[in-house]
Length: 266
Image: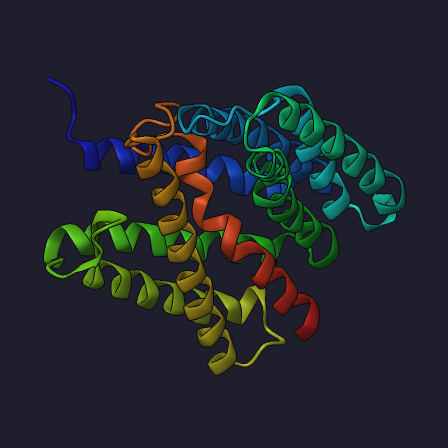
Protein backbone atom coordinates (compact mmCIF):
# COMPACT_ATOMS: atom_id res chain seq x y z
CA UNK A 1 0.00 0.00 0.00
CA UNK A 2 1.50 3.31 -1.09
CA UNK A 3 1.51 6.29 1.28
CA UNK A 4 -1.03 9.08 0.68
CA UNK A 5 0.06 11.98 -1.59
CA UNK A 6 0.18 14.44 1.31
CA UNK A 7 2.58 12.20 3.23
CA UNK A 8 4.82 11.76 0.18
CA UNK A 9 4.83 15.53 -0.31
CA UNK A 10 5.86 16.15 3.30
CA UNK A 11 8.55 13.45 3.32
CA UNK A 12 10.06 14.75 0.09
CA UNK A 13 10.08 18.27 1.49
CA UNK A 14 11.80 17.07 4.66
CA UNK A 15 14.62 15.72 2.49
CA UNK A 16 14.92 18.50 -0.08
CA UNK A 17 14.60 21.54 2.16
CA UNK A 18 17.52 20.66 4.49
CA UNK A 19 19.62 19.73 1.46
CA UNK A 20 19.02 23.11 -0.16
CA UNK A 21 19.60 24.88 3.16
CA UNK A 22 22.90 23.04 3.63
CA UNK A 23 24.15 24.07 0.19
CA UNK A 24 23.19 27.72 0.74
CA UNK A 25 24.53 27.92 4.30
CA UNK A 26 27.64 25.75 4.27
CA UNK A 27 29.03 26.15 0.76
CA UNK A 28 30.35 29.30 -0.93
CA UNK A 29 28.19 31.06 -3.54
CA UNK A 30 29.57 28.70 -6.20
CA UNK A 31 27.59 25.92 -4.50
CA UNK A 32 24.36 27.87 -4.90
CA UNK A 33 25.29 28.55 -8.52
CA UNK A 34 25.79 24.82 -9.15
CA UNK A 35 22.46 24.02 -7.47
CA UNK A 36 20.69 26.67 -9.54
CA UNK A 37 22.27 25.29 -12.72
CA UNK A 38 21.01 21.78 -11.92
CA UNK A 39 17.51 23.14 -11.27
CA UNK A 40 17.63 25.13 -14.50
CA UNK A 41 18.65 22.14 -16.64
CA UNK A 42 15.88 19.96 -15.18
CA UNK A 43 13.28 22.72 -15.53
CA UNK A 44 14.43 23.53 -19.06
CA UNK A 45 13.93 19.93 -20.19
CA UNK A 46 10.40 20.03 -18.79
CA UNK A 47 9.70 23.41 -20.38
CA UNK A 48 10.95 22.11 -23.73
CA UNK A 49 8.47 19.23 -23.46
CA UNK A 50 5.63 21.69 -22.84
CA UNK A 51 6.69 23.74 -25.85
CA UNK A 52 6.83 20.62 -28.04
CA UNK A 53 3.34 19.62 -26.88
CA UNK A 54 2.13 23.07 -27.94
CA UNK A 55 3.60 22.60 -31.41
CA UNK A 56 6.59 24.94 -31.04
CA UNK A 57 9.75 22.90 -30.34
CA UNK A 58 12.68 24.55 -28.57
CA UNK A 59 16.26 24.21 -29.79
CA UNK A 60 17.52 22.46 -26.68
CA UNK A 61 21.20 23.00 -27.31
CA UNK A 62 21.09 26.69 -28.18
CA UNK A 63 18.21 27.80 -25.97
CA UNK A 64 19.47 25.71 -23.06
CA UNK A 65 22.96 27.15 -23.36
CA UNK A 66 21.54 30.65 -23.56
CA UNK A 67 19.45 30.04 -20.44
CA UNK A 68 22.53 28.89 -18.54
CA UNK A 69 24.45 31.92 -19.80
CA UNK A 70 21.65 34.19 -18.61
CA UNK A 71 21.83 32.52 -15.19
CA UNK A 72 25.58 33.19 -14.96
CA UNK A 73 25.15 36.77 -16.19
CA UNK A 74 22.51 37.48 -13.55
CA UNK A 75 24.49 35.72 -10.82
CA UNK A 76 27.87 37.29 -11.56
CA UNK A 77 27.58 41.00 -12.43
CA UNK A 78 31.28 41.08 -13.29
CA UNK A 79 30.70 38.47 -16.00
CA UNK A 80 27.87 40.37 -17.65
CA UNK A 81 30.06 42.09 -20.25
CA UNK A 82 31.25 38.73 -21.56
CA UNK A 83 28.44 36.30 -20.79
CA UNK A 84 25.38 38.35 -21.68
CA UNK A 85 26.50 39.16 -25.25
CA UNK A 86 27.33 35.46 -25.72
CA UNK A 87 23.85 34.60 -24.48
CA UNK A 88 22.28 37.06 -26.89
CA UNK A 89 24.24 35.60 -29.80
CA UNK A 90 23.12 32.10 -28.84
CA UNK A 91 19.53 33.28 -28.46
CA UNK A 92 19.63 34.97 -31.85
CA UNK A 93 20.96 31.78 -33.44
CA UNK A 94 18.26 29.72 -31.73
CA UNK A 95 15.56 32.15 -32.79
CA UNK A 96 16.74 32.20 -36.41
CA UNK A 97 17.00 28.41 -36.51
CA UNK A 98 13.54 28.02 -35.01
CA UNK A 99 12.03 30.68 -37.25
CA UNK A 100 13.29 28.96 -40.40
CA UNK A 101 11.48 25.75 -39.45
CA UNK A 102 8.18 27.26 -38.29
CA UNK A 103 5.35 28.86 -40.27
CA UNK A 104 4.98 31.42 -37.46
CA UNK A 105 8.49 32.84 -36.94
CA UNK A 106 7.46 35.35 -34.26
CA UNK A 107 6.10 32.55 -32.10
CA UNK A 108 9.22 30.47 -32.70
CA UNK A 109 11.48 33.37 -31.74
CA UNK A 110 9.47 34.04 -28.56
CA UNK A 111 9.76 30.40 -27.51
CA UNK A 112 13.51 30.41 -28.20
CA UNK A 113 13.97 33.49 -26.00
CA UNK A 114 11.61 32.38 -23.24
CA UNK A 115 13.81 29.93 -21.24
CA UNK A 116 16.55 32.52 -20.65
CA UNK A 117 14.02 35.06 -19.40
CA UNK A 118 11.74 32.71 -17.47
CA UNK A 119 14.39 30.42 -15.97
CA UNK A 120 17.90 31.84 -16.34
CA UNK A 121 17.48 35.38 -15.02
CA UNK A 122 15.30 34.55 -11.96
CA UNK A 123 17.51 31.65 -10.84
CA UNK A 124 20.55 33.85 -11.37
CA UNK A 125 19.00 36.44 -9.06
CA UNK A 126 18.98 33.86 -6.25
CA UNK A 127 22.68 33.18 -6.73
CA UNK A 128 23.37 36.92 -6.78
CA UNK A 129 21.41 37.28 -3.53
CA UNK A 130 23.55 34.59 -1.90
CA UNK A 131 26.77 36.22 -3.14
CA UNK A 132 25.83 39.78 -2.19
CA UNK A 133 23.71 39.44 0.97
CA UNK A 134 24.96 36.14 2.37
CA UNK A 135 23.28 32.90 3.36
CA UNK A 136 20.86 34.24 5.98
CA UNK A 137 18.68 36.47 3.75
CA UNK A 138 18.75 33.74 1.09
CA UNK A 139 17.56 31.09 3.53
CA UNK A 140 14.89 33.50 4.70
CA UNK A 141 13.52 33.48 1.16
CA UNK A 142 13.74 29.67 1.08
CA UNK A 143 11.84 29.35 4.36
CA UNK A 144 9.23 31.92 3.41
CA UNK A 145 8.37 30.30 0.09
CA UNK A 146 8.40 26.81 1.61
CA UNK A 147 6.07 27.92 4.40
CA UNK A 148 3.75 29.65 1.94
CA UNK A 149 3.57 26.67 -0.42
CA UNK A 150 2.95 24.25 2.45
CA UNK A 151 0.28 26.44 4.02
CA UNK A 152 -1.46 26.90 0.66
CA UNK A 153 -1.58 23.14 0.13
CA UNK A 154 -2.88 22.13 3.55
CA UNK A 155 -5.15 25.14 4.13
CA UNK A 156 -6.72 24.58 0.73
CA UNK A 157 -7.28 20.90 1.46
CA UNK A 158 -8.75 21.62 4.91
CA UNK A 159 -11.03 24.61 4.36
CA UNK A 160 -10.72 25.58 0.72
CA UNK A 161 -14.11 26.33 -0.82
CA UNK A 162 -13.84 29.21 -3.28
CA UNK A 163 -11.77 28.63 -6.42
CA UNK A 164 -8.98 31.13 -6.92
CA UNK A 165 -8.58 30.76 -10.69
CA UNK A 166 -10.83 27.89 -11.84
CA UNK A 167 -10.04 28.33 -15.53
CA UNK A 168 -6.32 27.92 -14.87
CA UNK A 169 -5.95 25.77 -11.74
CA UNK A 170 -9.22 24.36 -10.39
CA UNK A 171 -7.60 22.94 -7.24
CA UNK A 172 -6.36 26.31 -5.97
CA UNK A 173 -8.63 28.17 -3.59
CA UNK A 174 -8.91 31.64 -2.13
CA UNK A 175 -8.62 30.16 1.36
CA UNK A 176 -5.44 28.30 0.44
CA UNK A 177 -3.90 31.44 -1.03
CA UNK A 178 -4.81 33.40 2.10
CA UNK A 179 -3.21 30.72 4.29
CA UNK A 180 -0.04 30.89 2.24
CA UNK A 181 0.14 34.67 2.48
CA UNK A 182 -0.35 34.61 6.25
CA UNK A 183 2.31 31.92 6.68
CA UNK A 184 4.79 33.89 4.56
CA UNK A 185 4.14 37.05 6.57
CA UNK A 186 4.72 35.19 9.85
CA UNK A 187 7.94 33.51 8.72
CA UNK A 188 9.40 36.65 7.15
CA UNK A 189 8.38 38.71 10.16
CA UNK A 190 9.77 36.35 12.81
CA UNK A 191 12.87 34.76 11.25
CA UNK A 192 13.71 38.11 9.70
CA UNK A 193 14.44 39.44 13.18
CA UNK A 194 17.65 37.34 13.04
CA UNK A 195 18.26 36.93 9.32
CA UNK A 196 17.22 40.36 8.03
CA UNK A 197 17.41 42.52 11.15
CA UNK A 198 18.04 45.83 9.41
CA UNK A 199 14.51 45.76 7.98
CA UNK A 200 11.74 46.86 10.40
CA UNK A 201 9.11 44.31 11.44
CA UNK A 202 6.22 45.95 9.58
CA UNK A 203 8.21 46.11 6.38
CA UNK A 204 9.33 42.49 6.76
CA UNK A 205 5.72 41.41 7.07
CA UNK A 206 4.89 43.38 3.93
CA UNK A 207 7.79 41.75 2.08
CA UNK A 208 6.46 38.36 3.16
CA UNK A 209 3.04 39.22 1.74
CA UNK A 210 4.61 40.35 -1.54
CA UNK A 211 6.80 37.23 -1.80
CA UNK A 212 3.80 34.95 -1.25
CA UNK A 213 1.61 36.88 -3.69
CA UNK A 214 4.25 36.79 -6.41
CA UNK A 215 4.81 33.11 -5.69
CA UNK A 216 1.11 32.41 -6.21
CA UNK A 217 1.23 34.36 -9.48
CA UNK A 218 4.21 32.25 -10.58
CA UNK A 219 2.36 29.08 -9.67
CA UNK A 220 -0.70 30.14 -11.65
CA UNK A 221 1.44 31.11 -14.64
CA UNK A 222 3.06 27.68 -14.70
CA UNK A 223 -0.38 26.08 -14.31
CA UNK A 224 -1.48 28.03 -17.39
CA UNK A 225 1.45 26.59 -19.36
CA UNK A 226 0.61 23.06 -18.23
CA UNK A 227 -3.09 23.46 -18.92
CA UNK A 228 -2.32 24.74 -22.42
CA UNK A 229 -0.14 21.67 -23.01
CA UNK A 230 -2.73 19.32 -21.50
CA UNK A 231 -0.57 17.94 -18.66
CA UNK A 232 -1.03 17.88 -14.88
CA UNK A 233 2.66 17.89 -13.88
CA UNK A 234 5.73 18.79 -15.88
CA UNK A 235 7.30 15.45 -14.86
CA UNK A 236 7.46 12.96 -12.00
CA UNK A 237 10.98 13.95 -10.97
CA UNK A 238 10.13 15.00 -7.39
CA UNK A 239 7.75 12.62 -5.57
CA UNK A 240 4.68 14.38 -4.27
CA UNK A 241 5.55 17.62 -6.04
CA UNK A 242 5.72 16.76 -9.74
CA UNK A 243 8.57 18.14 -11.81
CA UNK A 244 11.33 20.63 -11.14
CA UNK A 245 9.32 23.37 -12.80
CA UNK A 246 6.38 22.53 -10.54
CA UNK A 247 8.68 22.94 -7.54
CA UNK A 248 10.38 26.23 -8.49
CA UNK A 249 7.49 28.04 -10.20
CA UNK A 250 6.94 30.27 -7.16
CA UNK A 251 10.64 31.13 -6.99
CA UNK A 252 10.78 32.35 -10.57
CA UNK A 253 8.40 35.23 -9.84
CA UNK A 254 9.22 35.93 -6.19
CA UNK A 255 13.02 35.72 -6.06
CA UNK A 256 13.92 38.68 -8.34
CA UNK A 257 11.61 41.04 -6.45
CA UNK A 258 12.88 39.84 -3.08
CA UNK A 259 16.48 40.27 -4.20
CA UNK A 260 15.77 43.81 -5.35
CA UNK A 261 14.18 44.66 -1.99
CA UNK A 262 17.13 43.23 -0.04
CA UNK A 263 19.61 45.21 -2.16
CA UNK A 264 17.60 48.38 -1.67
CA UNK A 265 17.17 48.05 2.09
CA UNK A 266 20.52 46.62 3.18
